[in-house]
Image 1 (cartoon, rainbow, N blue to C red):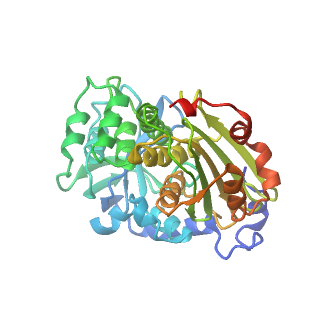
Image 2 (image 1 turned 45 degrees about the vertical axis):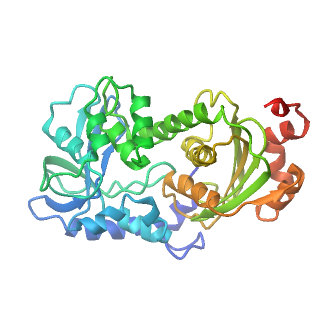
Image 3 (image 1 turned 135 degrees about the horizontal axis):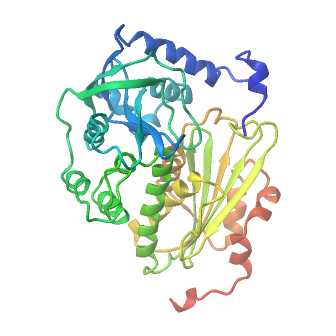
Length: 405
């Protein structure tokens, strides 16, 4: 829910922030527009990045994303979450908003002979930045994007022509699976991730129609969540055969005003996420909000009411359990504070949980002791978030079969 204060404020600082994310986008727009030549030509290294929209589905806008006049080293940073973590929120917005979405209208199924799409697919295969040249048929449109799923992106340009100025560097496994039309999408995603291909690369392959048997364009926001979900389900299949962890442990950490408390309990796998949006955080306005969703050993049924953040938070927890070859019941709190004043995308959740799980855990004898410890760092009083949890009641009262494992 966006706040009406933005309509009344128009950059006057009524929200109390030193920088307005809306005006920040327009400042970036001016610098990007000046880097496009008079005939609409853009030169720059794509990170690599592609974008597929969802409006008008099954007719969608799709194409490469190119930062004008940016070299390969600088462009590479724009698609690297670990590099973006080293920036402030305003810097992430400013840098990512330099990415021009050079797009054209394509049918999700019937456009695979289109030259512009074929070149975009060639770009998507690459593991590193690729020098590109694009020509736009219309001036840039200031339709910048940044929300809770998508990483900030710059203005839109109507793509007339597009070419790669160098050969993309394609990992062998990506090259193989990108042309293997017999492999199921979920199997291809699993094999790519197991082979060291990161989520961002897999997402763009899926989005631009390069994975699976039934190939089609997939809107980028859908492909982000689908990738997290498919990899997560693959991990669940593995860890259900592992023994439970031995100790009750709590991990803490976060980034960009997204703070996580992660409780692991020696039981069979289940997962619950509480999202606490504090007052004056990016979507909450003048009131706080608490959301909840969970799953058991069989995984999530249906789509989460917490949308893409649920799958992005679950994935690193499952990665951790698979790495230590154990299973556990996972209770996770995501508290979004006013420090998170502009949305940067669901990658923030994924990386914040990974960062938290990389810290040393605190060990406890009882779940109650662990929860009391977590409550000392969660700003929202425990009496407000504990009643929202279903899993905590299960931990206290439900008889389990863990003793027989």
